[in-house]
Image (cartoon, rainbow, N blue to C red):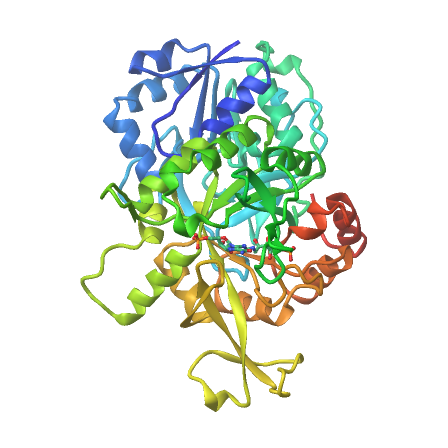
Length: 532
Ligand code: 1PR
């Protein structure tokens, strides 16, 4: 099968391409409006904001051919924002008309105590059989969005699947051969690939001849999984090879040499097969290198995305650069290179601290930060802030102006209070900013998720710093990934029972095979916590 891909240059469509190839099909791109009408199978992966998608489609003359194709009932599959684009408009981009094939407006998730964006693996309830879900076993699928199509707005003729996230929302629509999913099949592991494969496979012809199971009784609430993430800290070792390394409280050298725990691409592939819900790469020397010259890291992403079909995050060195020869690259250009190479999210560390310092300085003339620039183009859900805090103990809250907690783990001199200082350059430099200030301003600037490390716990195996995690969860309404200190599966159970963290991340225990990802999931499941 030759699949025609509608790539309008707004984000990571490499994963979709790779998924199509993995399924044994050929990809061609829409090069002109008429290709939209003549395509045998059209795939429209939605990336970017509603307004950006519609603006690009309009600019390329694709709006009318798309409407015609959909109204004619020719095979069409839209993903994520492409589902939303079928509606008349969206709260995300007021005044921007959508394709308008389904009446109604797309809405933002209301504040319900759940983190927005919804990022992660959720169930779907099929409302009726569909050939695309023939053989679907009810697996959780990967969602990432802040806006949703509402049931009230969706003609039952279109409604195919429903999920819940505080409120019910439309997970899939279908009319004849025109289908669209709010979830990402290309990021939903083998279950997602199977669904995509059925769209790309032989045309089932009359849909009524195909049966599939409606997976659970209508109205059963769907449940988000807590995500288990494997993190690969990557850098060159002294021989110049790119290796996965791991520090103890950020010190990655042992007996003078950089620890070598494996090759990034191979390790990522292993974690995918072992059930990791996401993979994160951190280029831990990124703060000092010119990243567009750092081809090995881009190559790692390109190769990983060839056969790893869960979300990939890349961090390290995402900021504007001017090298010694005066060559300049904006943070957006650096991030774009990573998205093109297969990243779904980028993570910003040191530069986020700098952005918050500028913001708090109150300069009205300040330039937009990397967070704002990247979020505006790729959406908040693509921008993660990696925070590297360390504890600063004080005898009483009066000793500091920073957001302070009373801790159950006293300091070296018996201090009962501490605040969490943000650091830059891989923990080498402390700044006069606390973690609450940092995450709150970053969320305001457009970040979609927090990757919360902890220098005191990193590599210690002593468990997550639950006090830090609770503090940050209470400070923001975007998802928080807890990181640093996992030493056993029980630490993840503790994390999810005692905090509302959305995901748990570990490095050392997975690299050294002390605990397998599946063992973590089993322990978490046995404790009654939802996993994939
Ligand atoms: O500042 O935007 O260039 O980003 C640099 C990134 O690299 C930041 O996200 C920063 O956290 C990371 N980083 C820099 N230096 C180090 C180092 O270790 N020397 N690694 C470093 C941070 C922390 C986690 C680790 C968890 C779990 N590593 O990524 O994987 O602590 O470890 P564990 O389960 O073994 O305890 P920028």
